[in-house]
Picture (cartoon, rainbow, N blue to C red):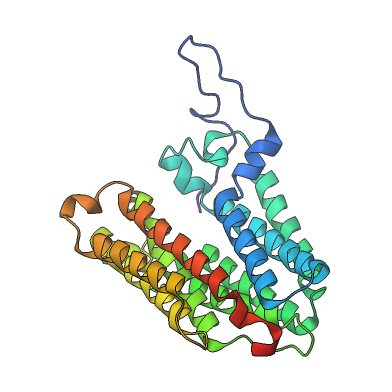
Length: 302
């Protein structure tokens, strides 16, 4: 990674009147550098899963806190490692590239969040905590190395495939989750990896980031994201024991329609942010199905 400094041509953007623009508070910039939206989404999903598997308020709060700390560490690590590439690309939306927060502050925050994640995870039980720390380690391996390789999808599949196990292992008796739940989580996360790359795929290729989605290209990555999201939805629909509910069937049909739109839509669909939005909608359907399947995750069914 090339050496960087905190000063540069983009350090102090000017307003149209020619005066320096007011910089946001350091804490705001630091929070923005943590990738707050993905971190919040994963944390909320964890809270929903914790309630679904039957974790009480105390145990659920510990699990959510551990996941939040881990997600913050992953986001800060990602931005700190990408600062040189983001500055070269002129990413004014990135606090480090814009010079509104120092690289040392983001690096320190990443390490502090990672250190906090260890006791928070182990507070959920040694076995559960070890599984969650393995999830975080997989995500860090993506930031440090695997995002540039054909195995860029692997940390997503491993980390999210093990997330349900982290929660169920925190229950009395340390039960493992049903295989369908782990498979659905891994499929959804792998699809999210392909979708997450879409808005920046051209810039990634120009800067030498060659994960699997970048190697496949935009059109095939759209298809992969949509098909994986639909597969996750299908597993969540048919995996739990008992008949498929009417709501589950309708949500599966909606996901199939979105999948067909993404895979077989006109070439113009592949451009812009629309495919990303479509796959996000599919992920939202998956989350709704997860809530509908919550009764199958009660302790008596694990």
